[in-house]
Amino acid sequence: STGKWSTPTPVGTFAIHNKIRVAYSARYGLYMPYWMAIVANGEYGIHGLPYRGNWIEGESHIGTPVSHGCIRLGPGNDVTVNNWAEIGIPVFIHK
Image 1: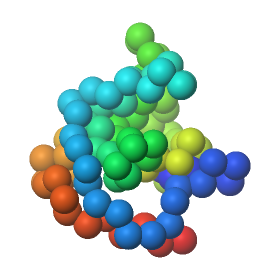
Image 2: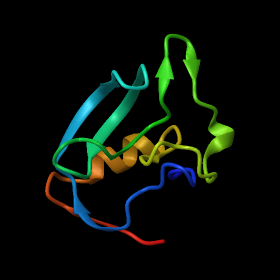
Image 3: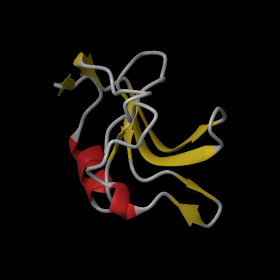
Image 4: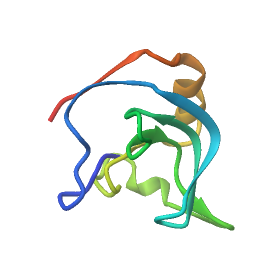
């Protein structure tokens, strides 16, 4: 999933800046597994489905623009991409 129309995913050439097993967004009160920041300030990233406690953002949203600009990956794909992507690898986002 990518950003919804009101909070689009940025378009351009980026890179993986850091990887965090489980990152936390204080702004949205959500945990994001397999976080990989694509901008230096950490505002946007690639990660697994966000969760809070026992609540997990639905897998049915994969492929639908619903995020706040991040790229969300489904279960299994989040682990695969995180294990494959090295820090510094380029990330190309097209519209």
